[in-house]
Image (tube, rainbow, N blue to C red; front, side, top):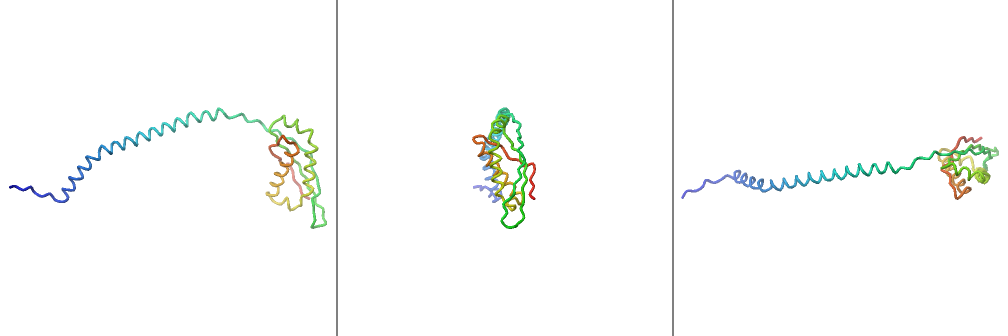
Length: 167
């Protein structure tokens, strides 16, 4: 009886690897094809969404209306002062920003009401209420709220300061 020469462990392992490689080669090809197909399809969908939905958004943008500004008369009030004997004054020049021209005609008849709301609020302020940018921001927000209450149901876009002087 002739015996076959024994294979070394390395040779046996190499033969097993060849079998694994031969079996896994079709699997690898399928995986690569599926990955390629997924990337191509995903890119196509993303391109379609980007191209066609982007053009619709730009076409649907409404034209921007120019803002309308209304100057209010200068307001001069003495500030509420409980700590010292010296009287301090506040001088404010304000501009109202309106969304359209039609609103300007509607608020002209109620302008005395707006000025009254400004006078009564500003007269109760203390000099410390106007300290820093946060104090001016609070003043602007409160004046906007009071203007909108005076001209309701209409609304102004903003109250803008032209000049603020505390003496």
